[in-house]
Each structure stands twice: as structure tokens, then as C-alpha cells.
Image (tube, rainbow, N blue to C red; front, side):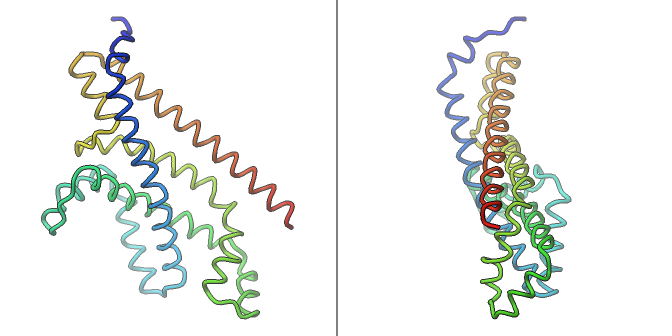
Length: 222
């Protein structure tokens, strides 16, 4: 068996189309998951015991079940509750909710790491909860949550491959079809692995660059 580069070249338009769908879904779901996770973390921090416990149960369920099951429930179980979605919207919603559960815990840990004395000082000078979040919690927690946030971004990127199971035309689905039709599984898997490896390395590099910039900013503003 030899590696046939012609399989890749002849199917390049379809491969690029699948890669584009993967990247777009990833770009949409990552900030959506981060924002939703942040709002949940804020609600658990300032919303009282009942809200904290309620969100805690939901997050425990989302983190304790495989994403594959969750996306099946969103796509195939949605019609039972009047929610009929096409594959791509279902994938975006499912992946955003899945990521939000993990981002909420990242931000909640970041909140907890901020010294209580800083928050008490803000209260003493008359800052509102919103001002405390913007002026104290967010600046101090940013450096703490950046590394795990980058890691979660990478995880969400990899989880886009699961969306092929609900017929989202992303790269995994595209290359799986090419491999099956032309019996070129090695070529298809090679391209798929290379694509995700490049994205992981690029994301890690950007995360390291952001961490370096923020560290310098914090140093010069002490």
C-alpha cells in the first residue's frame, strides 16, 4: 500500500470546504461557550445559594456525560420538546453548552483565587457588584484563567470532529466519506491529523503570546 497524494489533490475543494466548516463552528462556539460560562460563574458567585446549587447540578451532568450523548440529545431529542434543528445549528448549540460547563468552572476557580481582601476593599469604597467584577475580579483573574482557557479552546476544537455523527459537513465527515469511497483511509486520516495538529500548535502559540503580553502589562502597571 502506498500513499496516494492524488487522492488529496483531486478532492482538495471538498477538503477545504470541510476545513472551513470546522473552523467557523470552532470560532463561533468558543467565544459563545466562554461568555455563557462566565455568566454562569457570575450567577453562581453572586446569585445566592439556590442559583448556585441549581447551576452546580446542571454543570455536573454536562461534565459527567460524554459530548457524543449530549449532541445526540440536542439533535435527535430536540423534536420531542419542539426544537427541530438542522445539523450545523444543533452542533453549534450543543458544543457551546458543553464548553460553557467547563468554562464556568474555570472562571469560578479564577474568582475564588482572587484575595477576599481585595473584594472587601472594593465594597468598603462603595463599589457595586458590577464594578467589583470589572475593576477587581476580571483584571486579577485574567492571568489565572488564561492557560486553562486556552486548553479548553483546544478541546472544543477537537470536539468538532464529533459533530460528524449528526451529519455536520465538517472535515472529519468529509474525509471519512473520501476514505470510504476511494479506499484511501491512510491519506484521509493523515490530512485530518495534520489539520488538527496545525490548529493545536497555532492556538497554543497564540495563547502563549497573549500570556506574555498580559504578564508584561501587569508588570509595568504594578
